[in-house]
Length: 311
Image (cartoon, rainbow, N blue to C red):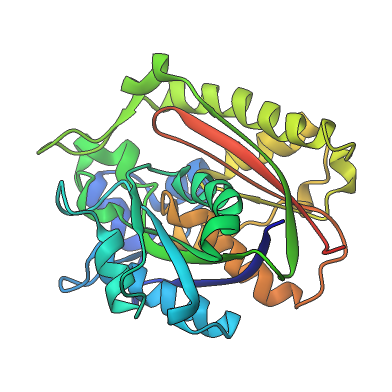
């Protein structure tokens, strides 16, 4: 068995609202809000890196879990915006968090990386004990901040999240996971070396609105859980319209889909864990209903994880 034990997050202090961003990319602030559901986002300070954001989230998570860093057996770090080809941020984050000499693995996966990390951690707890999953992104540095890049610049922000997956106890038991990939659409969302982020928005929203509900439905159906039985859906905060489409496709109440995209924008792989952290701290320590975590991202990669109150 594996459990979600604790969550943590970190977002930079600089707030960039639509009134500041819209003129830079040549759009109207009211249109930006209507198109995305985003009111503001956070941008990293010049001295902050993907690793420093991830370190802060990791420490926040471990403090919430009441687990010493020395008790963590593995670290998995997801990021699609790391500053260098190698090494990735995982080893730096592990060392700075005090997790010395333990395996630290990088998942260079945008948007869906944290979900894949949780699913992998659930399998690896039997061998490594507590597994710390971190996702950290600085998306503001990989998009063009002018009218040629407005379709991506209006969406993204920076931040980091973390989740401790444990073999013995936690607030939710991980029951099952569905993961999938489709390389036929890999070119629709990519970050080439020395080039800004490219996204075919129409293709991505079409694929996400089809594939994400199917993955959620699959994990629910094979565990005899109805969409209306799920207490909270925690999704990658990609776009407000996408979250609404997923709710409609599943026939689940719209209010059960946690949203914080208005305040942070799309923080890629970090968004799921930032959202989950805020939900967890607001909901309290006792879980009464099943929860679903789901994400869709570059690759294309997507999936869903079902968790229930501990038995």
